[in-house]
Image (tube, rainbow, N blue to C red):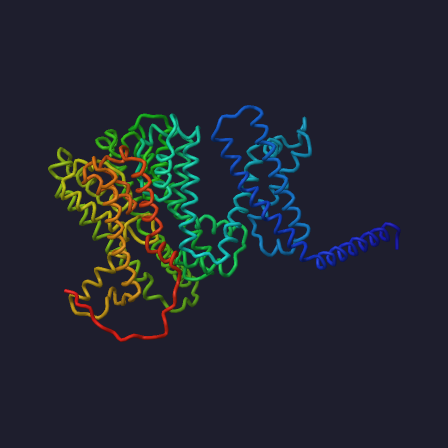
Length: 621
């Protein structure tokens, strides 16, 4: 054997022996390695929170050079923690990392390691690849890589907390509370407003955004800067989809780590039919949301070109914000006077139809959208099987479940009745002087808005009293369950109407579309209705006591708008006291998380006793 071959063979043997020795070391020290990994995981989670705080402080305040240097040193320390953790996991826990991580996690980890190169190697005077050099040495690349790693780490940490068998109702409620208070602090940043905002106003606006209500004591268009508008849009998007949608998506899809309990819990939260369908369901919800909002923004931009008068960038920002606010049923507008702006009301009717469609798309409910997706995909699969002459199996004779049919029928009936009633009541009042098409447009728009959106094209303060009562009923009903809308939900209203029909006709069961509505659904619907009435009574009476000088009609409307997360107002929101703002903030929170869900979470699950008591009747006329 030649000398080079001998050297190569010897080198290969030494590398093999070193690898074997390293494997034996890791096996002997597996407990210590796992403990070290847990410690670094906790440090990385704390560092992720610290990085978010650094970014907020950097963007929200004006800083001196010394303060900027302090922030930069903190970012470098966080970068060091991330790099040490990535190297530790790759070297000492490589097999575990390969087994649990997904492609995106590998990309994020490698990006974090790449940020080490500009740190230890000075800026080259003559780089080999100038474009690559500009990217690697750019602060945008550094913050993008660290931000992505911090986001994945933070979401995975939240999922680990979920794994502690936290009650899902309390978990959702707590997540909303956290973002409400974080949003309050963000909206109070100096760079978020032009002239500042009080704590109570910021708390109210943040609650209204996270709970996708739309009530506001300040004028959004003149109070918040572009940065404030971005924060408001993020709060609305998080509130509409739910905090757990984002955290579980990052943790499950990017990190690939979630216990069986995590997945069962998230399946129940998102009403997924199986754990295998959980990630596809989350992907579909996020993809559908982004697609609809971008399509809506494009349609709005095309409809307002040359109408509002600002620059192209302002029109794009308005289109994006308004599309998001419409689909999320938030009701915020960055345009002076909102949807009642004369340039829109008397010069652009198409934007009202676009907004109406976006509101309905958001209020229809994610379970129904998922059901539509499953039915379409199944039809497409069967069609491809027929083309390729493959057996497609038994056909699903009921591609749309009872919940989907019930919601679509009830939602459509309420929308048509609402539009017809608004035209009849306001034809000679707020709609006077409009053309027939403009009256039809405003009637359809004002039939969709009270379901949860909260926009105002014509001022509700000038409506007939009978119109106000009709709006209160629509606000009380709201949109579909698991949607961005509020109210008791269309599903609940349909269930109690079916139960009422069964009682009147002497039937023992409530039936719809050849399906029997479960007793549990009827009982829960009755409980939701009862709690909504009791809650509204409490908030209305308390608000009347806190504001004795304000008109009762306006206060009763305000309480309903807050509790059922609608956002419409008769104009009293800016003059409410701080105590009333806090009261209505709690009403918006309860309306968003669901009173019955919160009570179930606080009370906990209790099994029925084994004893069965004799049945007796109560006299009910």
